[in-house]
Length: 188
Image (tube, rainbow, N blue to C red; front, side, top):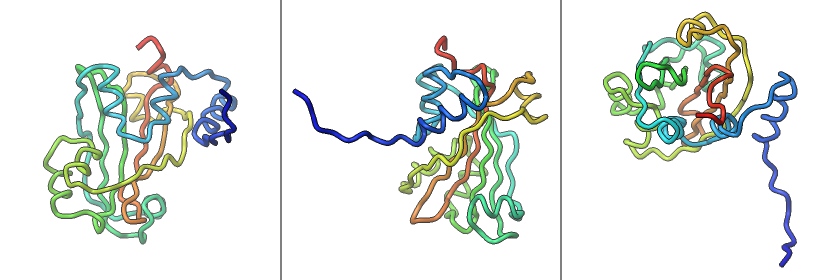
């Protein structure tokens, strides 16, 4: 039986094709899944590698500069939580993430969990039963920063994705995740 149907437009698939063409690379199926999932990446990494762990590199409250204020849609100078983490397996870094959360959009309980617990942001938000949706805003291949070169012990380029978590029509979290281009090939 044939169905009369419409094509489902997939903007993320198109963005991945664009990134592949611009960088003359062919990403693996696993890399495409990791880049395009709109759920927590830690769940995907757990499925691929077994139990993974979080290590907080840096976290603090700071005044948003112009760039950060634009990312989370707040006024410049508003207080945001800056967090940098590594998700790892037995000390091997799998993914680096940088996140910003406007303090004004966080409950006291979320702030306590951010500072006190070793949880990924998705688990903190789920713990507090905050309904959000993720919107992937960019996928790129970038030159490694000095921090990423040191953490991953490589000079290779990094696959990155940026996304926002939206709650009540406002950005609750902006995140950028990065990992070496050689990671997450189909030979996991």
